[in-house]
Amino acid sequence: MTAADVAASATISRSEVLRRARSWVDVNVKYTQYNHYSNQYGDYRMDCSGFISMAWGLQPSGMAAPTTRSLPSYGTLLNSLDDLLPGDAINDFDSHVVLFVSWADAGHTVANVYEQTSYGGPAGPDPGAIASQYSRTKLINNGYRPLRYNGIGAGSESGRDFTGDGRADLMAIDSGNSLIRFNGDGAGHVTWGGAAWNGAHWAGYRELTVGDFNNDGRADVIGIDPGNSLIFFPGDGAGNVTWGGGAWNGAHWAGYRELTAGDFNGDGRTDIAGIDPGNNLVVFNGDGAGHVTWGGAAWNGAHWAGYRELVAGDFNNDGRTDIVGIDAGNNLIRFNGDGAGHVTWGGGAWNGAHWAGYRELVAGDFNNDGRTDVIGIDPGNSLIFFPGDGAGQVSWGGGAWNGAHWAGYRELA
Image 1: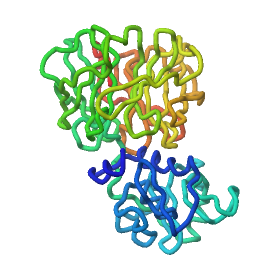
Image 2: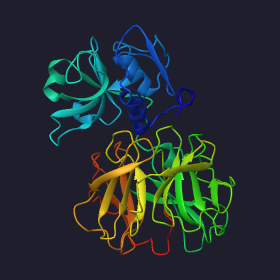
Image 3: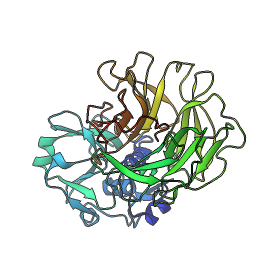
């Protein structure tokens, strides 16, 4: 999502805010109130409020970007620091502002933040754009207030919101080969939404995955057809998809499995990752126009035999897209994304080998708390919700649908 995209859109997702912030942190943009810095996200003043303005995609930009005194006019003050979600700001009206990433502890005594600072510390006398921590005591004693940008999305990325209501939805192929939409309620449940395509077109389709592949702010579907071509189905924003043609030139996709979508390289476009016939995890970079190109290996070596049900999302709230999947021992494992198209080992996302018999996992922010969750079909054909904690783990959330409705459904996306 570029500066122009944000300006044209009413909302920006929390993951996008963190991704934009990391574009300064990763290159350690230095602090000054007297100059501005340009990248793919626009041109902004190189101080703390310029940094927040860039992360939120605010206008005006450049040297005229909002200040700590004017930022509150773009947002809403929260009642408590405990109400903070990733991508919110913590603002001292007369002095400094930081971007909230997560709490470092269950007691909410230390906040992980991104900031643009000249205040010294571990990084030296002019640290610039860094990841740091603030104690709750420091925030309270120095008059910091939690601030939420009014244009920030309720939680779900546009890539899973098929109806435009700010809630994460599901798609699935039923036993009659129709594509069915299930509308999310923003509280971890889904309800019947009806057919997303007119007719039983979907026999033989596999490896469906969803995302905003053409950067129009609407959720789309990509999947492999019976002839092993990768096909793009753009969403209309009203819960339906239409034919979009090939997302790749040719029938390349025989033997590929576990496709999942996300912005793996941090360029604001939705990519696809999957396991190839040689059990390598590979990435295909999205072009923002409904197509993908070869991106190379996302992991060094053929590690992925036995893995299944891969899903993508920012599970640890660092602004980078991660992968979670079930290993050969039925453990749910997280692989942390580096924002450059690769993943590294992240450890268990659930304590114990709970996942035998689970199928059709999908990831998204289903309860609108700014954290990536998992939904899947259990061995009894019930749809189960597992809320994420924003630190790379999921926990039991109960049924996402009342009853064992899901026998015969496949290709949840």
